[in-house]
Length: 117
Image (cartoon, rainbow, N blue to C red):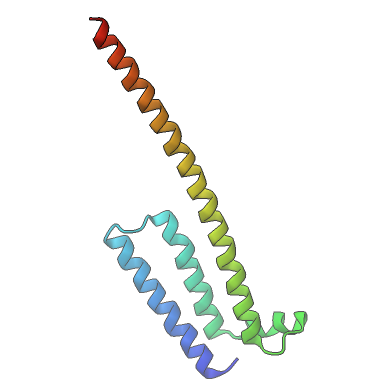
């Protein structure tokens, strides 16, 4: 892996860590969500310091250049993260729908009780 790619990875990892930590400090991100990004930035940092982490598997899988393996790896990681976030969003939407329906039933019940009195 070239020195330029390694420097970009190093700077990207440091910038990501600083951004995530600032987001946590300003209460814009939950710690549970930030853990994924912190671990990802640590992995990027390891890749920039020890490029053999990417060179060896790239050779096993027959990639022409280790950077292609790194790109594919990060695309796969982000796709998995996107899928889990999509699933979580769907679950939250279902909960919101159920809560909205429950509130409507409670209000109707309250309205009917007050009308009887």
